[in-house]
Image (cartoon, rainbow, N blue to C red; front, side, top):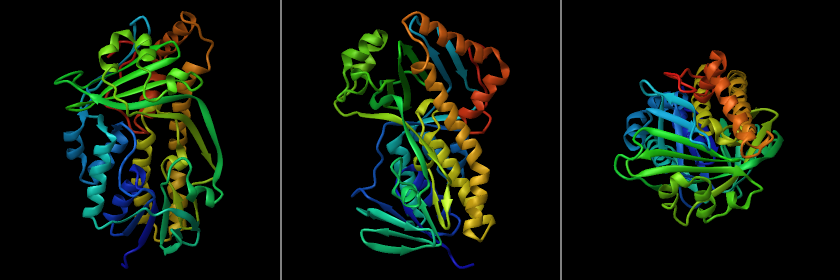
Length: 383
C-alpha cells in the first residue's frame, strides 16, 4: 500500500501522540510548531489507564514509569483535616510525570519513527480537501490534524467552534524540589475555603503542585506566586509552598464546545476539542486515547472522511462525558453557597455521598480513567 501522509499543527502532547500513532502505522508525518523549539509548557501530569495503554502501544510505558512516579494512594481532606476521600491503588493504574519528561519521550519516539518537524512554522489556514498553509507555504496531505490548543486556528478556520466558556476558577501549576522518599507514591488534595492545594510526587526529585481557586481572587492568579496567601490557607504545608520559585504559570480554566471533530480530511484533537478544568486529570489523557483511536479508525477505513466520522462517533460521547464531569467537580467549589463552616459541610456531605453510593463511586472512578475501569477505588475511608 502507498504510504499516506499527514500534516499536523501543534507539537504538544496531542500532536506528538498523533504523530507517533500514525508513524508507527506506516504514515509519513510532518508536524508544525509555531515556537522556535520543541518544548512543553506546564508542570506535571496524571497518566491513567486510558493513556498508559497507548504509551505501552508506542513502546514508551517503561520509560515513562522510570522517569515518573507510580501512585499507590491518594487522599482528599477538608479544612479541618478530615479525610473526605481515599484512593487506594492495587497494581498500576496511575503514573504521574513531569510534562516535560513526557514531551521529550514522545518527541524522541516520533523522531525515531521518521516524523519531520518544522519549528517556527505558523499555521494560518487549512483546506478540508486536505492541505495546510504555514508561513505562506501550502502543504498537501491525505490527512490534516489540528492539535493547536484552546485557541485553535485549524478548528476556527473550519468553523467548528461552538463556544468557549471561561470558568470561574483558575490555577497555578508548578514544579518544586522533592526530598528523598518524600510522599512516596502518595498524592494529596486539600481544601480550604474556595481554594485547593494538590501535592503530587512526579519524579524522584520533583513535586507537582496545583493551586486552584476563584479566578476573581487576586491571590489565586498572582505570578510569581503570593506565598503568604497560600501559606495562610494551608499552614500545614508551609515547607512545600516555600519551595516555589519565581517561575510559575497561571491559567483561567475554560470549557470548549465544538460542532464537530472534523471536516473533510481535517480532524481536530486535544484541547481544541475538549478543553476542560483539570479536575479529573484527563485533559491530556483523553487526547492521548483519542489519538490512538484515530490511528485505529484510519487503519480500518481507507477513506479518510469516513474514518474520521466513525472515530468521532466512537470517541466523542465518552470524551464529552469526562469533560462534563470535570466541570461539575469544580461546581462543588464555586457554584455552591459558601461560608467557612456551611460550605465545608456541603462538600464533605457530597464526597461522603459519592463514597456511600456504589454507582456514583464507580462512575467517578470510570470517568477519572477516561472510560477505562480502575484497578480499585476507595472513597470516604473505604477500601
